[in-house]
Amino acid sequence: MIKTTIYSVALGTIILSSGAIATSVTNPTLTPKSSHVLSDTVQIAQSSNNTAALKQSIFNQINNYRVSQGLAKLTSNSAIDNQARIHSQDMANGTAPFGHTGFSQRVKAVGIPYSLAGENVAYNQGYSDPAKIAVQGWLKSPGHLANIRGNFNKTGIGVVSNSNGEIYFTQIFFR
Image 1: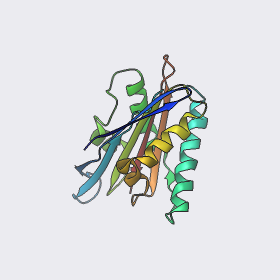
Image 2: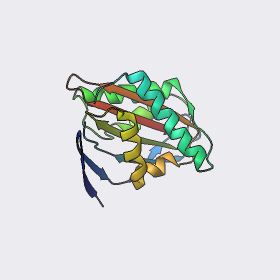
Image 3: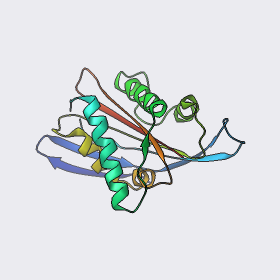
Image 4: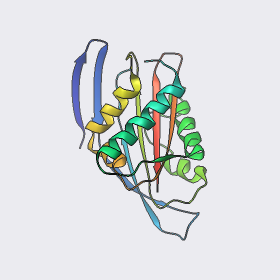
C-alpha cells in the first residue's frame, strides 16, 4: 500500500511515499540460505552540502536512534559504503532509476558474508540540513523504520549531489 503525505515547508514541498518490499536473496558467501531483503523508497523534495559531513550525520543519527531504542549501534563498513555510494551516484546521474533496482547485485558486490540485508534510499534538495530531513522521512516510514530497527550490525552510506543540487542518499544494512 502506498501512502502519500504532502507537507508545506518554507523551502519546498516534501512528498513521502512508502511501501515495504520483502525479497529473498541467495547468499553466495555462506552456506546457501535465503536472506530477507527489506527495501523501501522515500522521495523527499530536494539541497546541496558537503557529502562527507552528510554521510557522517546520517550514520550518527541512525546510531543515536538505535541506542535510544535499546538497539546496538551499527558499525561502518567501507565495502558497503562503496556500493551505497555507487548506487547514489548512479541515481544522481540518471543511469539508475531512483529506488532499489539492482539491490541484489549491490549486496553480492559488497563481497562480505551476510545473512540479512536491507536498503533505504532518499533524495532531497533545498534544505539547510538534508541529512536530517532524509532520516526524519525514514523514521516516519514503516518500511524504512523496519530497516533502521532491524537485526543488522553493519552499514554503509553513500551520499552524492548532482549538478541540479539534488542529494541522493543510500544506506545499506548487513547482518
